[in-house]
Image 1: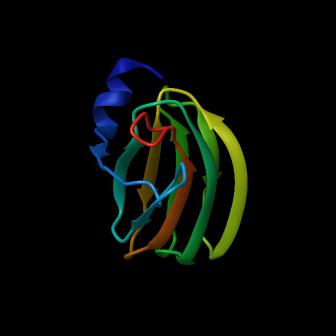
Image 2 (image 1 turned 90 degrees about the vertical axis):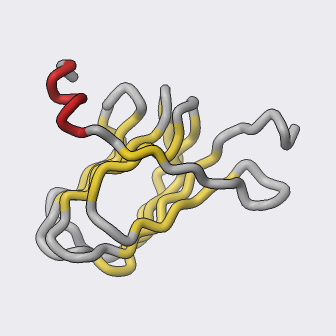
Length: 113
């Protein structure tokens, strides 16, 4: 992705603690925007869309902006992908209404091992 596009996205960093005793992390998204969930290599596991956010695009990318999953017109459902994400995990939610999404991923943590 060209550098000028990266500055337009300007992801907001979010920190999520792992579920106790596991490597699994999850984040619930209640507002549109661009969010960086992780800065390290991780395994993107799933996305669950409980409320779609009306006529918008939802995409999940690696930290290097490689697309992992995209839904050009959002609709409810649960999608299990379990794929590798290098350099982090970024969620882009360009939606007209308030969404309700849960994104899950696994990320090793030295404090847990």
